[in-house]
Length: 341
Image (tube, one colour):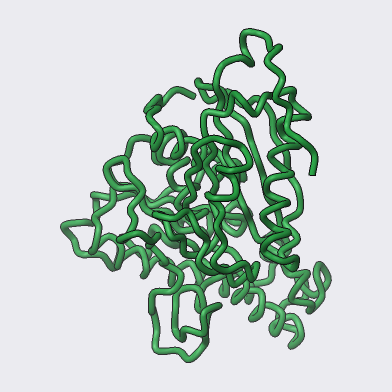
């Protein structure tokens, strides 16, 4: 493993302390360095290689940060702190990934490894919590009193920032919205839980039903675009097939969005958030259809006294939300409350 650059011979700008945000995804990992004013100093993206062992995964996280430092002439001595968003439930007291179905990395001591390697404070949070915090600080929900994020993808992730703090349980991350029960269906999610929001409305569920429709001949445009291979039916292919007139695919996506809208009703009745942020590749590909359907469904079914007290909006920060939010959470946790972008 290469050694990070620790030279003290830096110009004035780079001699200042900086923050590193890290977004660990199922297929990619992204590290971004930010100065004290949240100006980007450099970034490094790599494939995650989730099939590798957890030890190899930790080494890859460290080497990605080291490449970020070396490629942008940044000194490890000047790291103010690292924030990392990781998938799955997190032991927030110990900075440990508890379980990650998509990666198979369980009971992984992320904070301990990064703290020892880079000799700086490290904050470990759930990846969706990090993304929602990014949207709260710098994006679609800036300075909202209570914001809940829902991010449909392979599964469905959720997160909440309440009065400036990431909502967490007693030593463990929470807001596993995708695993809340939404129907009496036997269809199961990634944790073999039946009838969950994730089982009913994730991109993977939509794609599975879309593949069946293409096979039956009910989605000719999709069959031409992506065939019937589930791996090829991504968000962009679904969006393109709708644009080309596949009404069956339109109905599948709309139905999934209505289901998310029902979940929003439950969230509004529990937390009364002023902002619901919808993000992820599926939403980005079909923003008007999904956001509009979720908003319409939620407003129709929520108690009347709450109807005008919340808004449903698309995320603004895209792929950078997780890294930026993780870095900002680290800064908040370790004493920097600056809101400047």
